[in-house]
Amino acid sequence: MTPSSQRLDGKVALITGSGRGMGRSHAVLMAERGADIIVHDIDAANAAETASLVRAKGRKASVIVVDGTDIAAFTAKIAEAEKAHGRVDILVNNAGIQGNKLTVDQIDETIWDAMVDIKMKASFFAVKTVVPGMKARRYGKIVNISSNFALEGWFNTSHYVGAATAMLGYTRAWAREFAPFRITVNAVAPALIVTDLTINSMGWESIKAVEKIVPLGRLGDKMDIAYAVAWLASPETDFMTGQVLSPNGGQTVVGI
Image 1 (cartoon, rainbow, N blue to C red):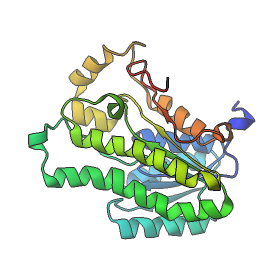
Image 2 (cartoon, helix red, strand yellow):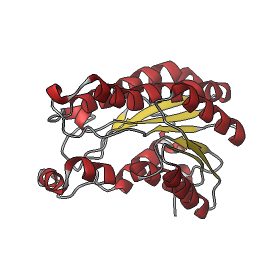
Image 3 (tube, rainbow, N blue to C red):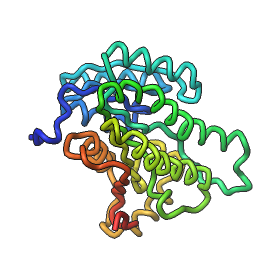
């Protein structure tokens, strides 16, 4: 049974990119802990499936199907969902794309823009949309999904690492800016997690090579990350802001 201090009863959480992968895990776990969920994804079928899983936990779910890089449409859909639910208490900036092992000379402006627009730009404007309501209620939880690669760097993914690093910068800046309104902002920087995106991007051979260097002897699971995100969204972290958690099996030691 989840301790009462980790419960999210009565809260409304918006999770971007929650149609599948880690985002879906965040949504289902938060629903299990009592939150109603606003599911966002560019894929309608995936978003509907996540919403169904949320409802199976006995919670309300609504769906936003929109390209997060279309800022006008994206923010309008968020505002509509916020109005329908009455508020957004928790925002998880999860949406993103893989780096696809590209060297600097292989990254053109189109590839760079795609990475920055979904990770940096969409996250910024999602926050801009929901923060006024959080300020008015003097309560909010923002969790930014970064990457362990932002902490240690990585090969042939500089546009991905740059965007993930920006999420840590947002976390620090927003933590200070929003603290007077009792809004906490923290980040989760996962190591390599096996999802459809990572399999398609890296292939099993590369994934197994990474597994060999993990001190704890295994790759992370989606739930390893979901537990960290749900904890940062819970009352147990009301005095924590501007921090980064990195579930990475010991690959990178942070916070000391």
